[in-house]
Image: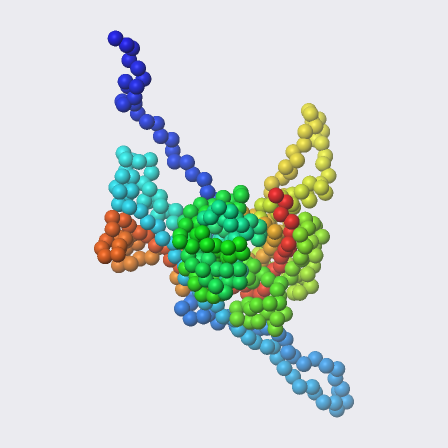
Length: 416
């Protein structure tokens, strides 16, 4: 008789399962986390009117007190901008088998439905943060190479593939945004190599130069969230909240164009000088922060390293120096905190006054309740299906109160 083999007892062994591992995708929402706290103006579906005291008009002149005439007078010029919230949603869905097979500790290490619902709010905020990087058109990537369709290159353009997310619905436009091509879905994203794989009947017909926009947009040109590059904009072309930029120099944001060169301290000082040249002692008030991609923060650290004087400690055993320096000191520039985000344009650095921003909303971010329920049966073409849904919905729009009360450095070299 042969000895009992391992295969003879495998059926009675207990499977060891580790705790759930997380952190395999980014959960970056630092800009929205700040903007979520700015004053929110509740409004209806109609555009919010934002009154603005735009220009001085009082009459100043030399006077002749010996019977001379008084010149005609005047007063400030008042105008207004308008803001309309953009409606957005995020749908969570699962089958009943998923629900029934993971709803207790005896069946699974995690209740997948409860986990999915709990992650919904976080995922919604992540998507808002990504749209805050866009310039009002909802463009989240530009096709730069066809590769082996349906996988496309989306390199460069400040973001590469960073604003894309698995499962996103995408509206495809031509390079001019004057032609809506159709809809696709993101199957997978390779952030390092800046490629995206798409699904749908259109996936093989996308051309180099096409724009990948937030799904659901069909108008030409598309219009979506007015993000950071929409408001902090030095261009004299286009519009700002219905105003023609060429006619309103008051809405042109101070900008230092780096011209594809590395970050320098001179650029930093020049930007701050330009901002003070527009509105005088602008840094005496407000809640200021630098906003940049980690790749530009790396450039900043390189500058700090170059100009640092290193002192070896007395009695040092081997004279080793911590060349990483102090992490907190790396998070300050001109006594202003530095905030980094992987969603930020990697060729740009913004200087933002958080008190200069506002948000208009008629539906705060949260689960939609239909019939008093937030978990709903999924309806098929003719009857219900063995699946459920929870839908997050919100309607908001962002505005900068004064586009000159801020500034940015653009066209910086991306170090790696």
